[in-house]
Length: 141
Ligand code: ZN
Image (cartoon, rainbow, N blue to C red; front, side, top):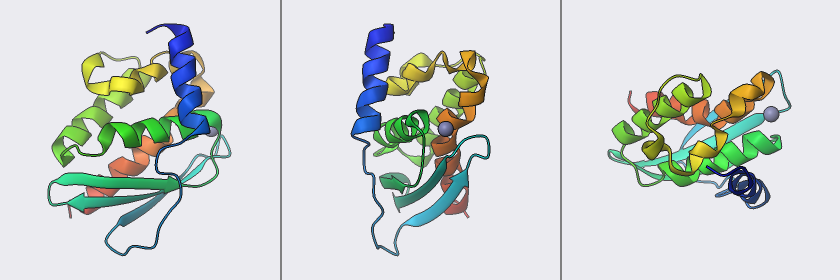
């Protein structure tokens, strides 16, 4: 993916994050995640419709990478089944860890494919994804 395109996608999600702001709704599953190596704190709320992820919202203090990555995670995973989401999350983690991964599955999340060059930002990119992973684990109980 072209560097300029990557930058503009990251910036767009940072400036206009998808579904930012929490709502009062007891049907959502809530999780929090923080990153001690940055300012990041992500509060995520997830609505499941049986096997599907119907909605995800987030809020919190987060740096540009974290906000953008969480917003991209939300746009990528809404409408997916839990199994599809788990596979996408795994591939995202593999990409960040420089392992082989399925580029097609990641859609816009591919913009973080060179974040390994900034090891201290890896957690920023991963935090929102860890939060949804936790929600999926709790949601599966
Ligand atoms: Zn950060």
